[in-house]
Image 1 (cartoon, rainbow, N blue to C red):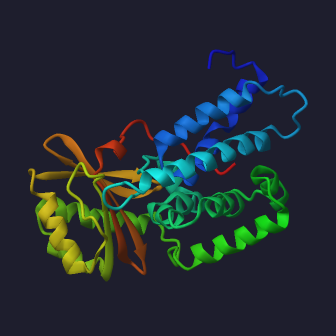
Image 2: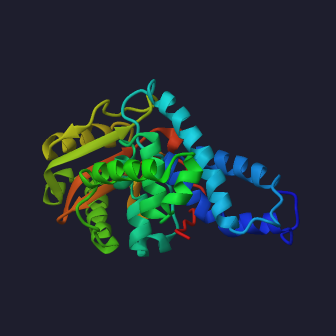
Image 3: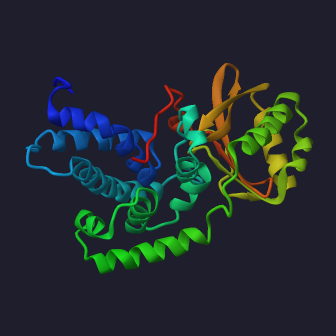
Length: 296
């Protein structure tokens, strides 16, 4: 950023960067777009005279949230012409995220998929209010609305999410055990063994972005899901799987021919996989250094 860390504006931004990244990523579901928004947030923040700003964290959150809302609406137009089903971009996260239940649940792929069903304003309000505990008065300032209007938006969003989110928080150890079963099944070719962990009505959502083979619509039912996986997993060579922490939860990275073929994450309820998310779009597969997330 070109300035010494002794500079108050730079120091404040660096201190809160992980928080800002977490907020914006949950709003957008795209790490690349999140980085763009954070860059713009920094540019606007660097023009602010920070000396009289009482709550610098709130000021930064305000800038980033407004920019994220604008970008979210742009993403909505991009999704209208997207080939197949759009999934949020998987995010490699540091191992400690999995140990923070509230944070891990809020960024899990299952929750991110639910957030995709909210209108832009509802998504921003829900995330800032329910995940980051931003007050209604501050939300009103961020969105240029009355507190009463924000409360109504929050109520609608809360009801919408409650009807669709996982019914329980599953310990990371349980998800890890299930993903180990997946790893063993893929590596040995014994996909039928997954019937022991798949819910009979499991839903598979795959995102190939029109670049790699993926189901254009969700696939429902354990047998159908296994047939689709068998047809994709081995068509280009023997797959090799590696465990990873993705969106704060245990996941698998699938390699074929020395290249990353996809990332598999799961929604687990009552010790069964009720949702499988298979990201195959190479434009959304980024395996750089794991990201550190924060709630405060």
